[in-house]
Length: 608
Image 1 (cartoon, rainbow, N blue to C red):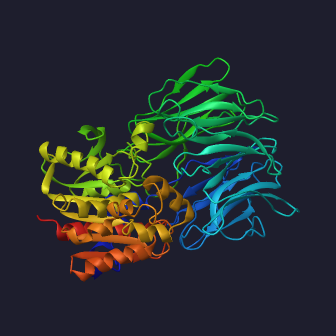
Image 2 (cartoon, helix red, strand yellow; image 1 turned 135 degrees about the vertical axis):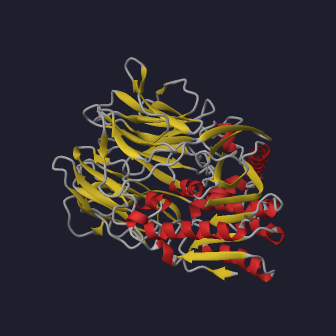
Image 3 (tube, rainbow, N blue to C red; image 1 turned 60 degrees about the horizontal axis):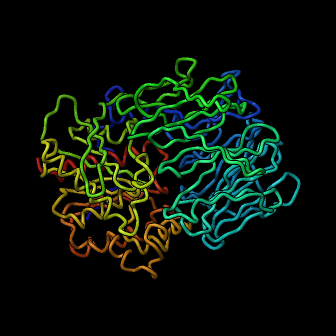
């Protein structure tokens, strides 16, 4: 067993001019889609890694001035502007453990202060700020108390307006501050939320619940109240036709307006600032597009974008749309329908990568979509990395990703699999992930692996299984349940011992695990055993590399240590790297260190 320290090889400490492209992709300054203040649209907030750590930045668009608002050793990404643009709220946790309090500072700069004095630290469960500049609705989650939601007004005592053991969260606050939308899972299904609308005193106004009375489980999500004074319309996401689509629900009259957009993929939406239309983001088969829907004429018009992925979009008061776009080959950029790049950070430019190719493979649960990248001009069979996404309810897309691009630069083909459980392929595909957790996804990965070999792409003697979070979990589970299939495994922040992970993880993830597996480890021990990597650890034959954050509340360190001790007990070839952060790192140097260690582990342990 080797305990890595992550030091940089001496021959890679040269000047930037000699820096390899894979490292430049991590170091090049990036920005998120700016969030703007509803009543002060020239004031914006965005995230950037310009200093080498991801932090929040205030941007006065009228003057062009940009100011770094947060500065913490492990970075900060959770922040929001108050509607009047006067305050930046940001979540202050300890070293990435996601447990902390909301703080705020003036937009123009000044000292930070507790945003809601008196509220104890917790995991965040949503936040909505009022347009009056003095009201906030704060969601909290703790292992002991479940979820609570609080109404905070400046100069008044904070009032608890909601409490339940199951997970819930603040959805939105109406434009006039009289209605509060809450997503909850009081029915015990953490994958499918119901909605409740409350008055500021906590009294209920309306309920919308698609989990009852049907033969399938359906979820709802809050997309936002209409941005109009006195308007009680709430934009809601639903799954009634087998995919995510929007509807408009008047929470006072109960009237529901089904928009029936007739798009094949999952659809999300937000209001245009005047409430006349919706900005629609349509995601289908690993790519996305944006459209405008006019509520009066019911006309749906595409907004031209390049082929790839829109990972965020917002409609501005002048009618323009700003969006964050990328493809596997082209780095991300914040663009505008008015033309050009909206926010272009100075400094090193990010090198591009190679385009992604689409592959469809017949699997045990239906056709599986995989995305393939390989070095330009290369012919197989190639050493091949199966880079498995986390979530599990997420998906890989035709978007820019520095990790896969690094493998391609080093001569590997990269295959990413949107297994059952992934989003973007309909509700049935996502919800197929139940009870045989992990094993279902690995069946799909195995089918794509077989295609990769028989097609001539992949060298069967040089196959790497890797991923982070749920992808790291599937890596360890795959190494144990498919020991002949993989040459080596690289797992980042994984679930390794499912029972211990359940007992140590944050409460919201306990609820998700109960939904996925049908109960607690005490209620369904056979399912936890069947889905836990540690059950199969003695069958692992491939070299294993594991990296883990010592403050991780999602995949806690104790259960990873249990797995490593089992590898140690039989002298299995493995390396473990522990770093001082949570579920991943927001520090660029740390992320580069981790990728370098992974590349080095593969180079040392794959046959030539």
